[in-house]
Length: 310
Image (tube, rainbow, N blue to C red; front, side, top):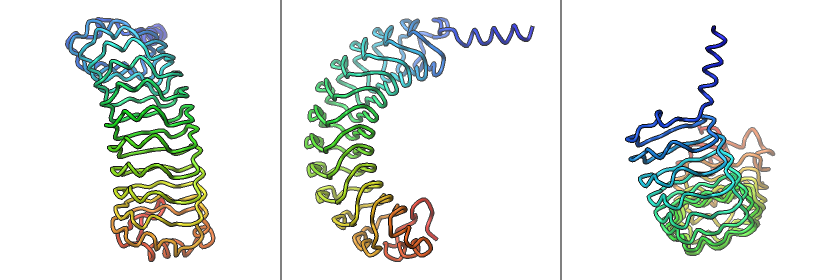
C-alpha cells in the first residue's frame, strides 16, 4: 500500500498544472521546477502580474497572449528556442529567458514598456531587433556568442549592460548610453580600455579575464566606485589616481611587481577593498605583503584580497 501511495505521489508531481489549481484572481503564479512541458490553463487568469515558470521542460512560449495585466514573466532554464507569442503582453516590464536555447532576438518590438530583459546563457550571436525597447533599464546578454557590441545606441535609458562571457574584442557602440551605471565585459577578448568617455555616470566597470595590458582612458569616468581588472596582463598600476570615488579595486592575477605603484591609490579616501593576490608583489613576499599594502593604502581600507584588515 505504501508503494502504491508513493507511486501516486510521483505521478501527481509530474502532472501539468490544471486550471483548478489556479484562481482567476491570482496575482502571482509560480510553477518553478514543476516538470511542465507545455504552458496551458493560464487563460483564466484575470489579474495576474507575475508568472514564474523557471526550471521546467518548456520548449515553446504559448498560452499567455490574453494576460494583459502581466508585468513579469520568468522562463529561466527551459528548452525554448524562439522568442514568440509575447507581442500582446504590452504591459510587460520584466522578461527572463536566460538558460534556454535561443539563437536570435526577435518578437519583442511591441514590448515598449519593458525595463529588464535577461537572455543569459543562450546561443545569440548578434544583438538585434531592440530598437523599440527605448525604456529598457537592464539588458543581460552574458554567456552567449557575441563578437561585437552593436545595435544598442537607441537604448538611452539603459543603466546596466551585462555582456560577460562572450567573444567581444572591442569596447564600442556605447556613446549614447549616458545613463549607464554598470558595465560588465569580463571573460571576453578585449585588449584595450577605450570609448568610455561619454559614460560619465558609470559607477561599476568589470573587465576581468581579458587581455588588457595598460590602464587608460578612464579620465571621464570619475564616478567609478568598482573597477575589476583581475586576470589581465597589467604590469603597471597607472592612470587611476583621479578615480577618487573608488571603493573596490580588483587587480588580482596580473603582473604587478612593485608595491610603490600603490601610490596611485593615495587619494582614494573611500576605498575599502583591494585585490592584489597572484601578482609578483604578493607571491615574491607572501609574509610581508599584507602589511606593506596596508601601509601604502588610505586608512579607509578594510579588506585585502578575501581577508579583513587587522
